[in-house]
Length: 109
Image (cartoon, rainbow, N blue to C red; front, side):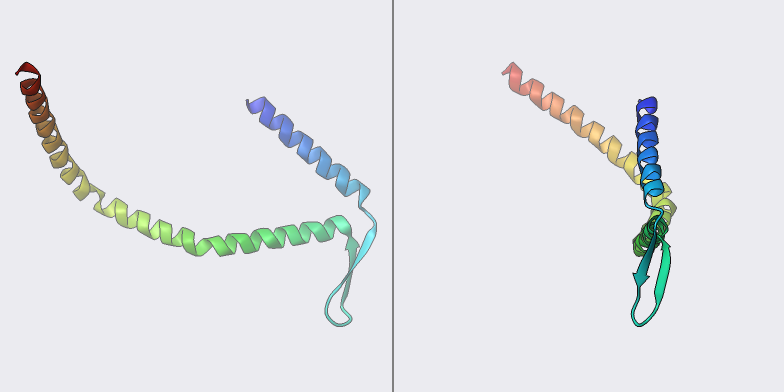
C-alpha cells in the first residue's frame, strides 16, 4: 500500500512539474491602480496557493487553540473521573448479576 501511495505522489509531482515547465512565459498581474507584477505564471500560482494555505491555517487556529485548552482541562480532571468510572464499573457488574438472576428466574418458571 505504501508503494502505491508513493507512486501516486510521484505521478502528481511529475504532472505538476510538467505544468511548471510548460508555463514559464511571463504573465502580468494588474492590481488596483497602475501596479503591475510581471512573473511566470507558475510563480504567481505558487504565491497565491501559499497565501491561501496561510489564510486557511490562520482561520483554523482559534478552533485548534480552543480544543487544546479543552484537552488540557479534561486531562487535568481525568484522574478524578478515573475513580468515578471505577465505581460505575462496579455498579454495572452488580446490575449484570441481578439481571442474570432475574433472567434465570423467568426461564425456570
